[in-house]
View 1 (cartoon, rainbow, N blue to C red):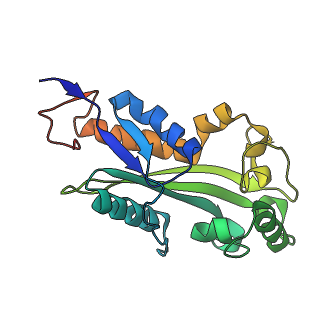
View 2: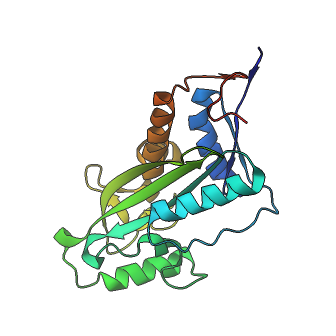
Length: 213
């Protein structure tokens, strides 16, 4: 029997995110691509990162009858009882910009001491496979929230999120540095390890009955 690459749909139209996922799944000989431009929009209405990731992956897998990946991530601030959480991208409103979200966060933490500004980025990645159990992997990155942003790299809350052991914000790291330590990278590595435990270790043969199409 010949060899083939398992193809996975990623519930995003962001090519930067697609490349990040491709980098990790290449280890298994699998190809990741974005959903088609006319893919149905999945409403993220769950109250956990895992819930949203699972819903997106399972709906895309069902729509296209093939394995699908999805992720949901955000920022949890201890002094705000975990907010903004699943609302991270729309914390200041449904169509809020990064600047608006950051401004709201800084304002809410104005009276919080430096010692109590701990926070973490959380990522949940789901892999839905028709007829099989959906896998979920998590990753976190611990840090703290500054009173003013630093750095010009990254996006979202990156300029406010400082890594105490480096005294740098995520926006002061190169993309390569960030991808080595990020919450999403940790979740991706976890997913790859889960798949290896299932027996997926390289290019799949046509007789493989696991995730293959």
